[in-house]
Image (cartoon, rainbow, N blue to C red):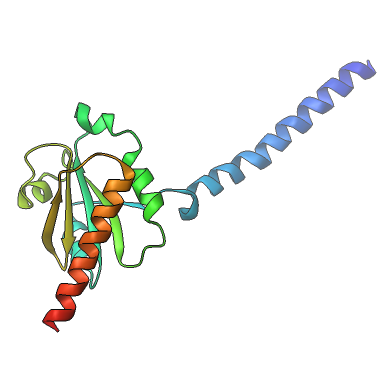
Length: 154
């Protein structure tokens, strides 16, 4: 009889522990610091975001059904993590299946497409290797060019 109670008590404690730990796990996984810094842009947010003062936006345009987009795996999230802490550079993504007007406006005809925007204007299109380091170097170089051009204009 004591063996049955002991087993039941352990099961109850395990269940209680899970009830306490699972919400904590979900809370921590939802914290911004634990997630990649990739911002989803939509028809409602795209124009305002890419016009943010002194901010370079590197944006991936994809659709869920595209095999080339699927083959990227976590590349864009990995780039987002790598770019965390870089001042005035944001990594964004647009789902062209749900934000068609955005993709039409910025002339997206194939997927994935990677473009850089500064002060609301497209300043570059990436056509290099689909790897984190070349993508990172590209956006850093373009951000530097944009900053220098702005200084010369001022």
